[in-house]
Image 1 (tube, rainbow, N blue to C red):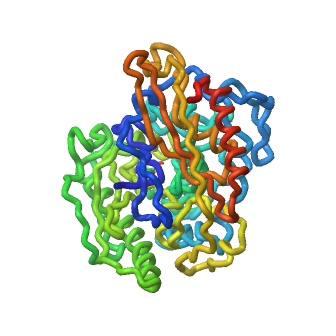
Image 2 (tube, rainbow, N blue to C red):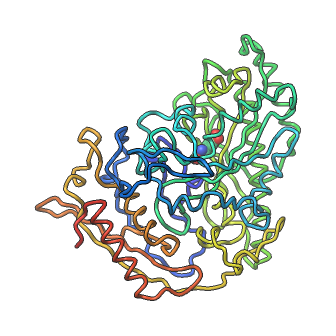
Image 3 (cartoon, rainbow, N blue to C red):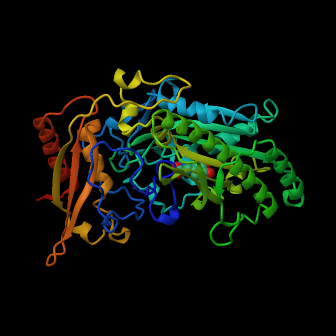
Length: 507
Ligand code: DAH
């Protein structure tokens, strides 16, 4: 089973922007019922709605949202609850003894100056233009949907990925051309936000790192000089130390249908060179991380297999050709990152029309979970000293669980509103029901006391064609034992809210 690369990959080809794959490598101390092989997607349509859907309206909406000392006007698009905003500003990646900061440093060490500047982005509010439009996301991409993304208002969202800053950093490279000519690349770390499933490896706030590197080409007719450009890139490639880890890379760099050359702008020779540089740079970074992970695992007594990596063809709206890098780790192939040759239109729109280059993005939590053997993504937000005191800057150590509190499972079964049964297509107006709205309600009420929400049953009435679903909610605190009354009370509120906000009928 595969974990999504950047925590959730943006593969348009999947028809869904977040692929809710379940991890098998992250140790689970207590068996959790796994998601049955039922498809919910029939009713959780990913069809785009450029009209605000009725899903989870904010009942008592303030007229502005204050985020990082800025006031943002709200409107009918707003769907960002205070429970999410309460995470803004923690900047876990700057707490030098925090596993996320230690992981950040490890990655940044592979992208050092003077070629790379290492940056972070504090304010998570970005325009829909920067998050989607300039990156070439089609109007109907599911990622734009209010069911998947936290809108501050019609024009602004909580960034769903660090790629939202690509344009600004390309512009910075252009601005600094005279003062910092050597800085031709960057890494950015930031918190990103997505409405998504609830389980031990998904949290609505997580962290991504983005990186890119550019090379100059002549201003006029760059294709006529593509041989020289390719040669320059190949010279830079030789400077990256090679490695002896087995790499599977069976596909051609360029494939007309699956992974096309941007032939208006690039020659095959240039793209071969950019791809070679990209691949060796990222292999080196991933090998560094997993060598550290192997050391920590074998110190902890785990048996460690030799490292293997492989390249998979991928699709992102802002790169072509594109790939994902996977690592064979403890018996599974794991997606680690997405990357590719930057779309030239993006560079043209970002004041660097005369450059060519690569970019990548990865999710930090999943790497940190593997490195430090952290079993539950909620732990990253813990203020419990029993968690925080276990980590030291510059050291990769295995997390020792300090408690194992009992799980408390509650099932919630309900009939979907009649319109949802038909699939609620865009043509039929707003889609009244989406699984992420259930997740958001549970999250809003249970917060970090919910470990996991799993669809355990789905049923269509043979006569009425009405659809019923049953979710199993696992209430479990990381820090203390929850009483049955507490879980019952939370679950009662969840049930009420499902009726009130989604119009479902409880069973
Ligand atoms: N932003 C992508 C995601 O969230 C990851 C990504 C893929 C970033 C390719 C990139 C890239 O810069 O070139 O899944």
